Image 1: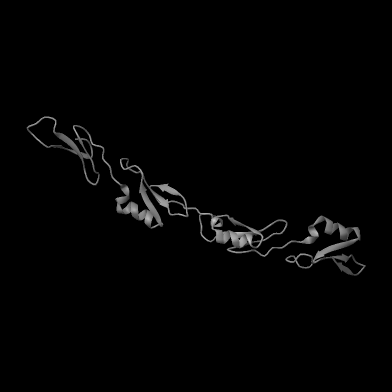
Image 2: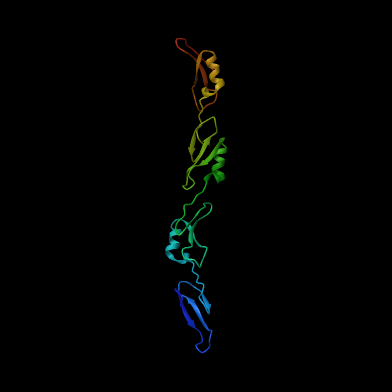
Length: 185
């Protein structure tokens, strides 16, 4: 007998009637030689539990080889891991609701950590800055950093001040002391 198999002779009076049988939990038999034994390792309670505890599915792609089971992530998440729980990933910006929330605010959706839930952000489009997790950001922009705006004030010997970084058109030129005064836009 081969390891993990037993030998059985179905008719002791006739030659060539012996066979190898796999020992449970493996299954299989072969007349006149070693059997190819198969076993779905996902039927093992501990292996299946490893996957189900992580909200994943156990799959055994090779029923003949030992240690061939793996945990697979459930859609829309993706990923798999041999002989253990997988690290699943999912770009939450592929969810049309999340992406639309950002694009409706003229922003882009970004998910910096695809292995964690609720980490997507809306990011402001340049030259504005700002980002917000799980929704549209409050965008800001100092219009005085814009070269033509800054030059307009500088050419008049004045400094530029943006009084509200969240609203366009709120910059003004300010007189430099000892002079006084200002002019919006």
